[in-house]
Length: 305
Image (cartoon, rainbow, N blue to C red; front, side, top):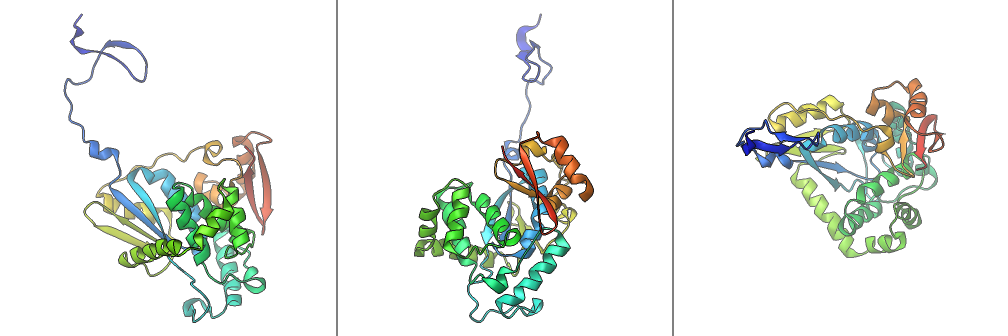
């Protein structure tokens, strides 16, 4: 037996003669993404909420090609002098109808009545909380952002109020009182201003904006809510070649205790019709590990384990 090429196969566990080449060139640069995906957004951006299903699928299936950097954009500093003529918004109560239209069109549930009863005065407080969590507990900031969006859009809570923010931060296992207090400091505003500066350099003029930039500083900018194909096409342009999709993880692995997925999200993630969502959940999840609820006429599932 020729013992010069003996090896143990990593997949089978069988040891014996190897069939690999004696020497093989490997490009280890391929092991780390060379593309940065900048996501310019704001906690109270309704179109960003509408984008969640497609953006999440895009990241799940193609995230191996890029690193995601979320940027807070500063949609509403205050109502003093604010106006969005394109959407007919001059005062807080004008936002309610706009939000309802976005919710109906996207089927990501949006209540919006808080704009009449208890309007958000600024999107900076939740944005600063995001930046504080990002700086102190990296990896938890997007969990906060998701919970904040659920709170304001689907469950009509004013995420500009400290107590609401404290409760949301507590839900993700952090000290809400401490983090919200830190978010009121000048240092937190400084972190937010850095995001505004970066957004300006990237040419962000509206939300959501997705900017993908490769190592040669060539990139594409996609503004607004687009189809999955549009983001894949953009990625292929900066990747300079065809990209391959990974499988979406099974529902059992996709979310943990306390997480929520809305019907529209499951429809987009798993290519199923709305009428098939509840049977799909029943076949994918263990009985007793979830609850199916309804908000604004849309079903959603809550993980209990």
